[in-house]
Image 1: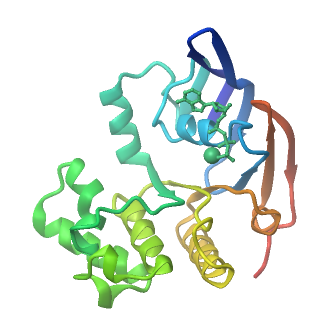
Image 2 (image 1 turned 180 degrees about the vertical axis):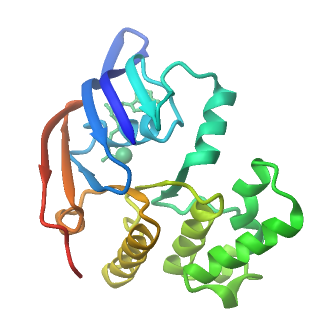
Amino acid sequence: MIEIKNLSKTYVMGATTVNALDGIDLTIPTGEYVAIVGPSGSGKSTLMNVLGALDTPTTGEYFLNGEDVSKMSEKQLAGVRNRNIGFVFQRYNLMGRISAQRNVELPARYSGVGAAERLKRAQTALESVGLADKINNKPTELSGGQQQRVAIARALVNQPTILMADEPTGALDSKTGIEILDLFERLHKERNMTLIVVTHDQDIAARAGRIIRIRDGKIASDTKTDPAQP
Ligand SMILES: Nc1ncnc2c1ncn2[C@@H]1O[C@H](COP(=O)(O)OP(=O)(O)OP(=O)(O)O)[C@@H](O)[C@H]1O
Ligand SMILES: [Mg+2]
């Protein structure tokens, strides 16, 4: 459960101040499928970074599963992320020189999971995204869609309750993009994971159960939709 109250994020750059987020109130129950849309520069990624405990707000409150995240130290935030959240980015953000398996293991490594258990988890995660046969391949030996699936496996390895994706299909062709969304939706359903997707694409947003539109750092609209049944 995500609960945000009157949250703001301000960037000061010399003489100019940017209110990237400006008085956001938001509750996202566990298991919801949410799309965040809005024009470039409206604050989507900033909101995602705060929701994902990658960054703290300037003012306001953020409770994640009852824990007050808004005033945590960097170290505490890292713990919250490791326990609760899996991230997927537009550019995959994989390490180019190490195998899919070792990429997927990384978050488990950061949480102090031992080598044998890490390998087991990486195998299971790569299997669940349909890449059991690519476990030893490096990202450079994989297609864009396969790299994004490795990134999704990596996001799953600590069994998070929340999966967050910022433009996860932005670097993919439309057919591969749809496959990636199908995969997200399967995982969301099977595991009752909260799924939060930032997107420019109206068709992608329309698949979510709820669409939150951001404009100038504020929530311009927040609409429940008929859950897409692909
Ligand atoms: N680290 C930063 N330092 C200063 N300003 C920033 C920083 N990050 C974001 N901003 C500013 O905050 C505002 C919101 O940026 P954000 O990246 O959240 O937009 P966005 O909605 O994700 O845009 P896009 O669709 O282009 O990815 C913008 O005006 C941006 O320039
Ligand atoms: Mg962005």
